[in-house]
Length: 244
Ligand SMILES: Cc1cc2nc3c(=O)[nH]c(=O)nc-3n(C[C@H](O)[C@H](O)[C@H](O)COP(=O)(O)O)c2cc1C
Image (cartoon, rainbow, N blue to C red; front, side, top):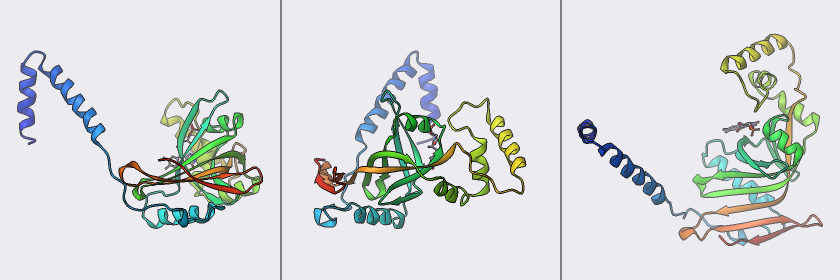
């Protein structure tokens, strides 16, 4: 097969316009291939009997456990979506560093793009893309900063390089080049040599306090199971099944 490539290429190069025609057809073939890419989901189902009607935590804990034990690479990686004051969205992957009934915690630079958006509009959506299990979990809620003590506890548990890196990187700002970043890291390394690295005032944790948590399990023929828990004004959780 690979031996025929150079021959084909030399033929196409020899015929005026042939390369253009070839490119056109190979591009439409690539498009067709995308449209043909699909998997049927049949690993599991999600029934109302799998989870209490008034509490999403047992199901969250079971699914997180499944994701960790199921060998998913970085099971705590989640997409964090935010929006600026005008409602323009942005999204990025971030690591979940804590989850309990109070909410879902991640750490970042408070002056990054997400930091600026969260300051203007303290709402976020989190998405755990556990596709190897044919599952996703989607959380939406209000965002608050965690306490300085909680941030300090986590900051000092990080490797030294990450602690210094937090000082060196003005996250989301434009750099002249890689060398500028490396110079900043070296300067901070020298500054903190032999000392406990203090927590940068512009860095810390965010807690997403959930108002809704949706559990999605893929099913055959796109007839997926979706159970969504929403927080009621009195603080109780209500569970509903959504159309796939
Ligand atoms: C798997 C993975 C995990 C990441 N974890 C974090 C994280 O915990 N905190 C963070 O600030 N950025 C993390 N990043 C980098 C972010 O995706 C992003 O580039 C950075 O936060 C800047 O985003 P922003 O400019 O939208 O604020 C991670 C990236 C990947 C791919």
